[in-house]
Image (cartoon, rainbow over all chains, first blue to last red; front, side, top):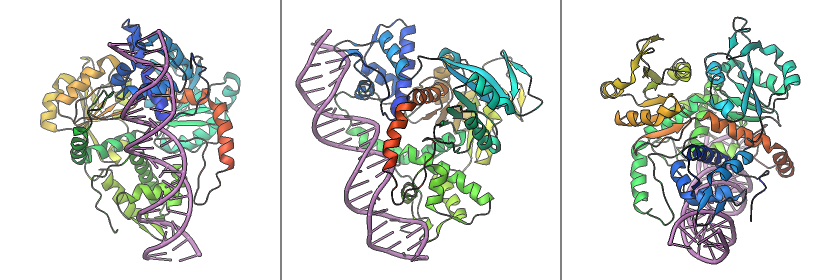
Length: 242
Length: 242
DNA sequence: TGTTGTGAAGAGGTTCACAGCG
DNA sequence: CGCTGTGAACCTCTTCACAACA
């Protein structure tokens, strides 16, 4: 293997999430002036193992130098390309309520090539208001506007009872991706990629973990005793993160 | 097996997420007056298979009636118990910015036994302001307050550069769970359960999916041709959701 | 020497398929 | 007869362990 042709691999969603994390760490490292970073370092920051980091990257090519690690700048470029961040993604936010507003002003968007091109709502009292250079538009214009402005992703931040209808509208507008913040399970036609963030579920996962913490701890103690392995690094309070 | 003793099973996080979804569907079904529901129905709503639904539930006991399905009311009770929703969870929100405010007013909290008992910030201009019956407190009081009020979960909604320090503070306050909305990977001591929601990652997962959509579709076509299996139900636009 | 890249082994989660029961 | 509950098969992701190499 040598330099990689980062196109279209079948890879687990969890792996994509890790790649996104690695990219963030690398950007930090770059800011701090580090030139190279090892898989072990990335593993420590991300709460995985160095083997996992190397496997994740190896799917797309060979980015490291043996004995040295990965050149920060090179790996950043590669990961951006892999994650599809080499281009601009045009976003519309649908729903100008609390969450929609918060999202519209989220600085992280522009930094990473995501441009918010419009905000929509169906509430007449909100339509026309200016926000950070954007005028809130009537959601009934969405389909028409989209034909012209071709947004790639719609961030859905409307109340639960409007969410499916709005998603249908987004699909009709031929917007290929939805990031849904409404606490409902949306059904979208094939060809629309859906990603949901559900507060209720996140809280319930926490609730489950807390309620079963004592039992977990007992188990963890037993298994931790026998887990001082070779390559291994890490060990945080608890798993996961996004 | 008969009625179940829903305590402390080792189960995948993905399974917990599905249980949370099932609970939501069941509550809907209850509202619509349905008395029973089959695993196939739950599968259709949640985008899985009926076998998956049955497996998920079977870990905790036998809740269904053969030939009939699951009694909605009974399964709701069981799932609430399993997910640890049988009790009140006391939440503090740390960070009274856009996101913090939006979350504080999120109606879904109280519905499911999560009570917001306080909001904190470090910005003098925000401290003292009233929101929906809660006064914004100085975050420097958090540790002291927590000793008295014993919150279970902290929702972390501060800027990225303050997030780790704030998480440390939360850990010192002996709050056992953190739901983190700051776009950084937090490191917490053992005994603190961390759950993160990261907009940047969610967007990048979407970005990856959209950038590789054509390749995915080719693969999906091939595999879909040979997937008209027995028990199987479902088939939505795209996988996942929360 | 230090660290990558990777085949092979291992774990863990999902799907199958059918016996069991209402 | 219909639908659940579940062992077994299957598959996917993770971890191991080591050869390759700067």
